[in-house]
Length: 192
Image 1: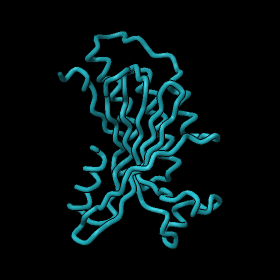
Image 2: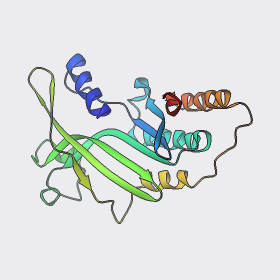
Image 3: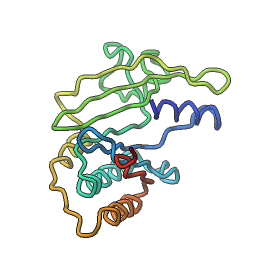
Image 4: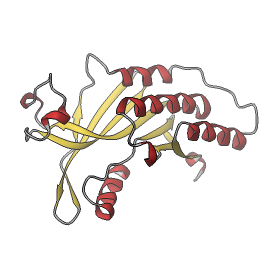
């Protein structure tokens, strides 16, 4: 819901075409421990470069924040009717001509070897508004993507034990995340 609100607010303020930055929510057990968001200056990089950055910061967060799950949010395209799209052609290419392809927020959640995929389709309306459709849940593919495989492997990495006090450790982890071009909000599980 936070990403949906961010998208709606960005469009209301800056107009149609405003994208939500790559965001990675970092979970430890049941609680959200950090949120990392790609710096807007890096939004011109290729998707592959931004995904590589995301995998790197996920590894940093796994080791430094003892992450047990990740939720990744990005803009993308989805098939509102999977049977009505050409599986050989990228959805971005089909978007202009195929009414069964929609822009969406794409949410990928990875934990304990499981991957959950969700799309929140939307369309633009007059007055800088975003009209949201019902969420679409997808079954994780039999052929996982390189990204989801990498994120699963990150979660299997050993965590590191802090060699300084916890506050200093978290600050050092946040500095590492920032070096990869992400802003990070952390320590949320401490905010009761």
